[in-house]
Length: 265
View 1 (cartoon, helix red, strand yellow):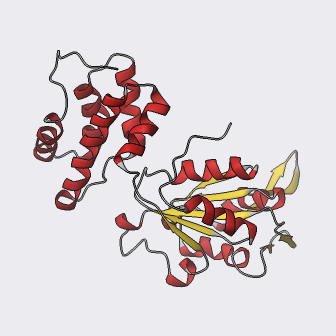
View 2 (cartoon, rainbow, N blue to C red):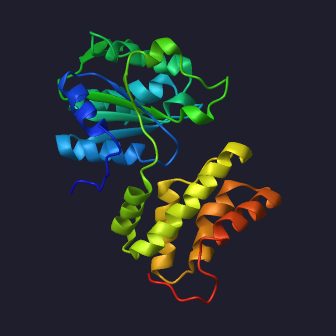
């Protein structure tokens, strides 16, 4: 079953074209705007498996490529997830690639140019990528620091697809499709999120994603009030500063039913 995905622009066509020409893709956009869901959707359309690697500070090149391990008294080479993805002709998805160290990302260079190969120096092996293999990376450029920045030379190896939040109507449609809540409930959740995203310009916090709106709608679907769901899923994770939370609560409360008021679910 193909995961539900609502296109925001021409990202589906560009991804397919990049896949046809064996080009790597970089997805950029705010947290929770649908980058991972998009990769899952495209993998289903292209009928390719996805190998997802969550990047972090401690990720090493050995974590990607593989290492020698002792198994039943023998020392054997064990492929890492990147190597397995190349051999299987899968889509390898590096989520939040900006979190990885630059020296770890250097192993991707030979995969993202004309060579399309992995050089496993320790194993003495060169793995050539089949035509079905695709490298996809993602990150949120709005919340990077000077210590976590992708080099321009690395970014230029990729076809970059800039993604953003869906239009209000499409975001509400996603919430309804994922949770089954009434369309009016979904619309109010999106209105709240839009108000908070606008306030983000002043407060500089991570804006609420479509993902958290779906989570809030799931609570509403089983009996939570809209205000309770928004408080627990949207407001509470945003900031530990009580003054900011109180201010945002006033912003969203204006668009939600008062406690005890009957609403459609």
